[in-house]
Length: 293
Image 1 (tube, rainbow, N blue to C red):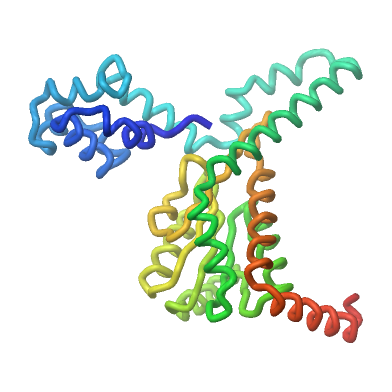
Image 2: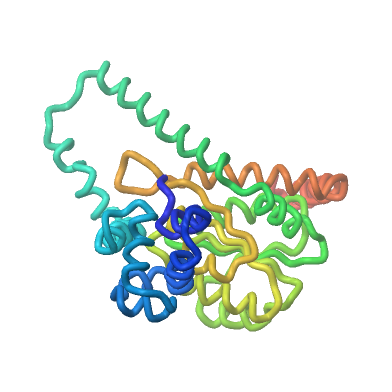
């Protein structure tokens, strides 16, 4: 996954002149909308000349300011892509109309798909900031905190996977209610003791951003799992865990996210220690006694 335009600007700040850095900061402060302002407007906001804005775009590696804006349009198109647009862009419909492949060709294709997933998982683990991961482990292993998890259309499966594992070895883990009245009551009771874990991948869901805002307003902590384009909820998060979504189908892959969740669960269990082991034994005893095992 290539870096976003905002990432590129941040990474190149050191290469810019003081006047050009003023332009870059204006672009970052109002990103992404600020990039679509006129050169004159950006120059005025940065208190520099129009030629300085143009030089900044050039120093960032673009032919001109319209070229920089075009790059952002492409990024935003990717950020809001749906399975339908991805299907059409990938040429999947053309592949389906072709004659069926031989068994040998199909085997080779399976190998290509495996390589793609392996690359996505590897890139996810390489790019996750160690401090972000450590902060997530610290928050989720703190017995004084309550943990709430919520996902979206498909990512509710990831939320359930994380939550069900956490319930095995720690107390006070809840799933965000689906029904309106129950969810409203649930969100009203959020406090500074709470850790809210949200899964929000493109196309982002507005309620996840609102939940993150409410949790922060009440002094709680927020962990957001998202894709490289970043859910709007990430702006309100204490921890942001970014996972790749590359796949060879119109559907984003959640395999890297699942792999990161399993690593997080293992790290949290290590941090909880013997108390987690005792909690697991008590839970299994209850399950056997009630005929659930």
